[in-house]
Length: 535
Image 1 (cartoon, rainbow, N blue to C red):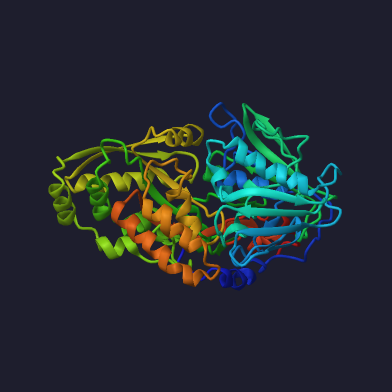
Image 2 (cartoon, helix red, strand yellow):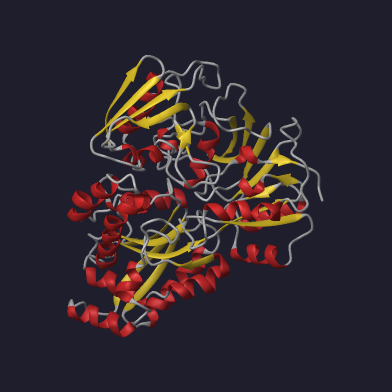
């Protein structure tokens, strides 16, 4: 969850020559050894996270990146990750009315699941109805909550009737939550526990599991795939590592061919200035943001004044510089720079860090100081720098004399469940966008059935401004409503944006297509990779 002021789609193309400096020709999927990709994403099945790879449950960047390789959606984001969605399992999709309330799709001819079973419009309806019926506690179903009814006409026509106008609906159909699943493998009213995935995407997959955790996943080219992608390899292995250091050592030894998220700031600095032999580093635009969330019903932070005082004290520049270096920039809105509708609402309201102003804010509200708080963070989901980030936050708040802050870290499988259940007063999270539009940096946090399961509810945002911006197909026209939402958030502070960052990928120099391996929307595109000739 982090985003950058860098130019988004254009930069990707400009980066291409960096990667191919020692690369060779496209192998075109020659059936050789699998390309091995490292990640620090950990996939664990437990009572708290029973179905990491079920489209009706999955709602984090790591799980979504697995699903994007295997489960097809009607629409998909372009190769760059920005711009309008393009047809994928669909042959075409279009708003068939003037009010953005009726969206009609025609499936590709002879579309099949990987096992050869034909895909029909009824399967699409089943898949999306299933997400809305299960209504899992991950809150991913909120992406599709604007759907009123789904109609099918014959085997290839699917028509979505929406409750209200939603110009962003095509983007939502491009998310794994709207993935098409086989009714034979996915029960209508219950999640598919474990790690098996069956779909019609560019790959089939098989995971190796130890102690209810995925060790590696092998993606094999799906011969029945029909869509707009053209996989450049026959097999890719995604291997999970417990730390960025272990992943980096594997890359330098040649045990893996590429590593994605999450590299440490130290690794990025090292590979930028003194790269190991036969290793390339690529910087690419990204949309990740990081923020603090608040349980606004918790006694410690129920008063808006407490949250406002924190906003007045936190020094985003110090966090970015001392923890993340050149890989992050301060963020003053939930909507990152580079996205249409962004404005620096928090800076406009609070300016530079000001302890005196924070003290006055608390004094006017009769808040006794120091305010005692615990800031919670996840130890294993966003990379090794998270702990240091929270140590800096603690230092900043405690140095003001207005707060008495402790920090506590938990593993992701415990952390996310506790956060959803309201067990944390203040917690850190990141956000990788579901789609590259300002709506997706606001609605998931502020609308009903939101991603945070947050108690904060603003009637103006939910009842007026979100519906107003969704009516506008022209997103520049939508900016007025979007900016009003950002101003309200800066005043109420249900969340506190911290920083936005770049994306990096490191690879062995015989791997080509790396410049496309992560789109600006943080979509892992394993189908772009191939093995060339070392330089």
